[in-house]
Length: 336
Image (cartoon, rainbow, N blue to C red; front, side, top):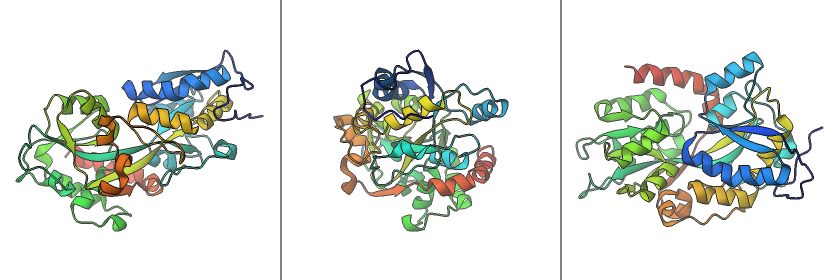
């Protein structure tokens, strides 16, 4: 029988000493911070060691599930992926996982996942490039006459890129879904010669730091790290797409009980707050109260939600239903 450890419990009553689960994320320092905030206290509570692997790779996950040789136990998923693969690549979650938890507004899960953290895709600009007139709307990302320079896109297109393009093209935030992907891609195509495609989030951060690009669509965590490391960039607070990245258990995990316990433990308010403070990402639990540092305050929309333009919440259900088709459209467009 599944025994879910009480969140934040340190009694050791669910001691699985000697056992191990593998947590899969996007790598780099963000994943190290997540292990510090969630993995270490979980090990203290249960005796189960949390080790990491990266990156998240859906092709590899599918191969594991198809072969019946699943070596991952917890994996971060985009809302689109979590919705699309619930019940096929991901285990259904016991309802007890979220018992007693009040989630923040906009933090929704699926039958196979819980929200893990808020991520945002935001528009930022290089102050060394734009020392006079500065971009102040998302439309300026696409205005290469007024604001010439290289525009950097993130490695994942299903985290807000399409929404921001449509907003820049005049679509009202209330009318975004269902997304007109052809229109969004046409908007990007209008500045294709100025676009740079990041192959990883590490590359995205380095490209901003070394000044090889002039504008970027970036997650807030990367922007916070950039400011911390001395980058002279500013946020353009006009439109920001907010999504709740998910934590799930791969179908066929050999350690499902411990993996479910770990998921429940990540919804502890204090652990959510610590993770937010370390990573510069939003907490998904209503009573978490992270204290952001000065760099994170410039990067996280939740630090001043009332005064940072439009907050658009990502529709994970729509993306889950349409991800395959959008992937085909985006891939065909990207390769020309």
